[in-house]
Length: 438
Ligand SMILES: NC(=O)c1ccc[n+]([C@@H]2O[C@H](COP(=O)([O-])OP(=O)(O)OC[C@H]3O[C@@H](n4cnc5c(N)ncnc54)[C@H](O)[C@@H]3O)[C@@H](O)[C@H]2O)c1
Image (tube, rainbow, N blue to C red; front, top):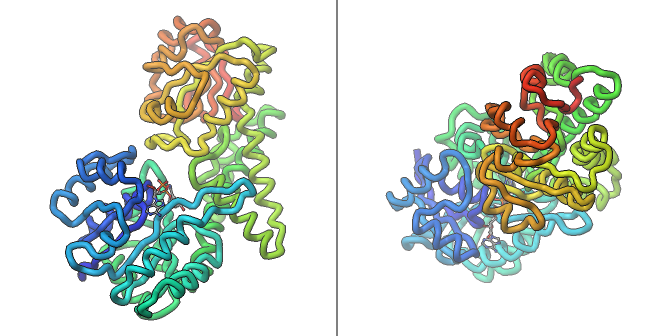
């Protein structure tokens, strides 16, 4: 196996995991970030995000010298006197107001990479970007590559999921390599050679870009489909968990991502859905299905408020404990978390909100106003009219229901993730409502 010199630009959820895992499979990696505080923290051994297994990998490879952290692209592309052969771009591509992806960081990085080219390199886009971004990156590099150093621009979309990112990176279902030349293909295949068991799909650059947007949009569609079914189940008294189980047993459908709940969030699905819809429209196609997926998701985020009103009449003046703030368990990521919209909609209706999350509290405190932050689920439930499960953290499954009931003013549980056992919760004396279950 050959060891490569790799530079990863952007050391967030994707960049840091990519850098640490590439070091784990034997490469020499420089992780770059423009956020100097983040770089200083990483150098001091502090991993700024919560991601199972990441801490250990980062510390081990940083100590061995195989993984370094720098705050300029120049330093990252020329660490220890060796020029990077592969440069991954893993910066953020946040949504603009109109739904399009803001690619200004990708452009800035492409310019700087071009200025620092000293030998043939493959510049790989790992950020999630709309189709044809590779062409723009190529044009940009061309313009700023004054010494005409040879290069290729490739697309290698990342499919890791937060909460299991390290495992997903090291044991992926597939590795997609969108490449413009055999040379780039050979180099990238060599980089990923130590990862066994994954199908490597080599495509052109545009197809690879589309694979990422299409995959995320399809997964979001499955979730919204299950959520739409749950609404119907609630109307007729059927059980969505049985309906989706029955659907998922069909191998053509599969059970994954068919769980009803209070809607999807995070830094990927909402923005990628919007950006995919936007780019399709730019190209002259109204991808109306994606609009419907978003509308169903928005409707679902009103579930807590709807059920609260069904049970307690007016929401105004009532108090609710929100359990779970991160957009899913095992991460501290709050970006586009459903909890944020749910809380905003409750506050708008003058509901008193208390909240608790096992890991996302520091980030939540920095951005949520008008919420009482509790020290544990029981503290959150103190004196409230209703408790809502918003993120399916494992620890919420084993709550002491008798203790909870004693502390609440009114024993109502709204389970937005179908986490609890209805029979057990009702036997403990609660009024219990879950998503799409009778
Ligand atoms: N988070 C996920 O689960 C996930 C999964 C797959 C793909 N993606 C995609 O990967 C990309 C990155 O997502 P993320 O969640 O890691 O974002 P992030 O915000 O956690 O990380 C981005 C990092 O890039 C840094 N950065 C921004 N501009 C820079 C520049 N000019 N030079 C150097 N560093 C710069 C930021 O400081 C930040 O640390 C996005 O396009 C996202 O859609 C994310």
